[in-house]
Length: 309
Image 1 (cartoon, one colour):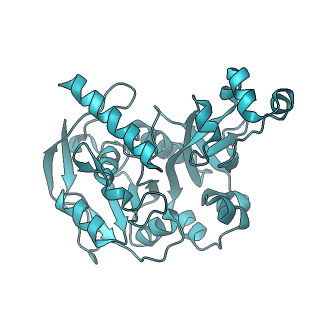
Image 2: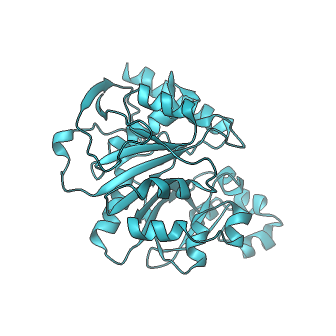
């Protein structure tokens, strides 16, 4: 597949300047449910105002150096950048990092990157630092650990803000299909109300199936004996879309207790009464939080590469 990558910016570069040069690169395609649309600069609308910022830090507690871990011979962060560039609703994609190793890997591959402060409490705060220098109405926070995110998922979330002026923040979700994901605290669950807005997020199983747990003695037994319970749960996908002015306001709010307890920055918004629109993901994705997640992605890419060949 042919991609067109923007020439990278060095630290201190004016982020308002448009990218003027592109160079092609050939990349591996992951097919089936996890597909990658080609980037076609001629299909981009020059008036689009959505810019993606990918926060990437080296010091992950569970998986140190995660952005630079290899998938099919290429750092994980480059997979994320390529998937984001394939979204038609974005005019630019910028990797925001506090680590020179990540910056060097991204720019050496021909992508755009910028250095940020090292003391941010969350990825959203890192994205906000970059957003202050951007002339864009919509800022997309593509999580740096989503190497297989579907470009169409990004477009769906961006479109939600484009068509609905009342929406200040949107995110995405997908069905949970395995009981292990319900029980895994690395998998964030979301509950969506009848209007399509998030009512809660948690690393714990929500909504809690109280009757089924009472009947079977534990949630593990309830899921094992009643597989239909899985349809009650949805997984939060690592993607946020904000109106720029709201993002800058949001980043200035102090962390709330639930955010600190769960390590989920979106709870800062819910705690303030912000309505977060939840959009269905176009296809499943795999967030890389653990080595097991990384191995799953590696195996999928290897399998699909063999099929493509």
